[in-house]
Image (tube, rainbow, N blue to C red; front, side):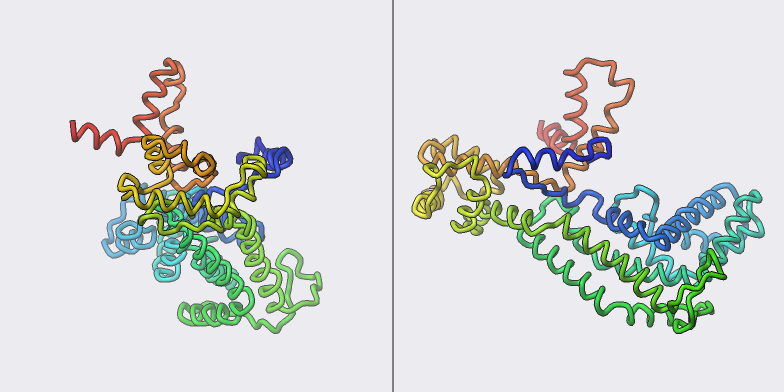
Length: 405
């Protein structure tokens, strides 16, 4: 929900006890992790410097005609031209782009530093030279190495579920299981991950000749060197940085994938006709009915006998074979007049069809609409605009239809 509509969720849920809040699973999941982590000042500074790095390197490479072939190759490798073209940018929601960028920083760290040195000496203007100098000093600091490996661990823990949620064919039960395992992985990282993180940082600093800190020394506030904090560097990086960031990400996962919303989706999957109704489970459907008391009165409540009669009928009927989703099942039920024989099951199917389960397809549709609905097209009639939007959203279906024709 946009910021302009803040409070709408609470208003809807207060109006109806059966209004369950389910996040769009795929929407900016990786970006959400970044935005949550940016609430920590150190992470925010780290990501801001990465954004500055992208602007400095990309702009300098476009404007400067480099003559040394070896330097060109290093710049290409550093900014990701070649195999890795997806680099982190503010608002970039492509799956894995942030994780790939952080990996490229670890594996090509020396190339990045050499690029900064080159821009500092041969930059197009004094601003890019000053920025390259600041980036070079920051990249060689312990702070940078710490947050680089911290964010690599955090985003790496969530990258698998991010990729799965962006698929068009999201398998609900497997996805929910993956979400739970990701939560467990984050909890394990919170409890046991700090020492292993320090080992990675120590190895990286030694490899690239970066000065490390004695974590047992007293912490000095970089903003006020005279201020006594009465804590050690280890306490600062473990409790104020590591634990804080991981806790915020875990909390966001609990909100985004609550037990209630996961149960709702798992119960809904019991209606799926795939693999000859393999996922059918009467107990889950009865639980789904309990979650919507306003749609099913006490007199209308389905029983296990009614559900058993329904599943036996549809399994014996060949017309219900090879169905892929609930929408296909509803269509066949109406065509075969089975919706009259099983009206309560039909009502349950209609309810499940409108549940807010939104994979990446919905986000792609909104993106297509934003591209089509320009100020110029706002001047045309609604019918023509709707036709343009349908063609933009259903490009694949339109292409298949034209090809057959």
